[in-house]
Image (cartoon, rainbow, N blue to C red):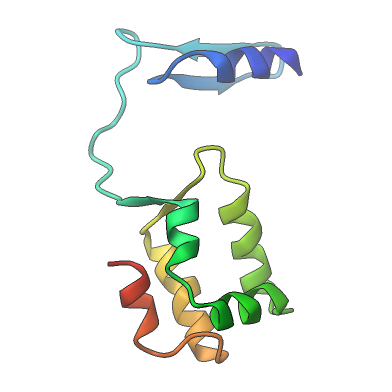
Length: 111
């Protein structure tokens, strides 16, 4: 789908709309990004470095479906950033509940 590749190559800010028969890329002034998103982000590598070796070993070896899904979602983000969102917090809390993280770790990881 070279049209999608072309759309991704357009400099940000942009809004990509995919229709069955065409791809439309909106850029300013036709498109103004929503600055109301107050979600903080952290680079993937910096986020990974916040985990201990023991935590990373347990997480990467986990067969838990929620943990596996989170790993795929985080590691395949185009922007290579981890959102400090409710979803991220929920996954970290789930990791506490299955023994992959200590109870104080989610808050420390998202400081």
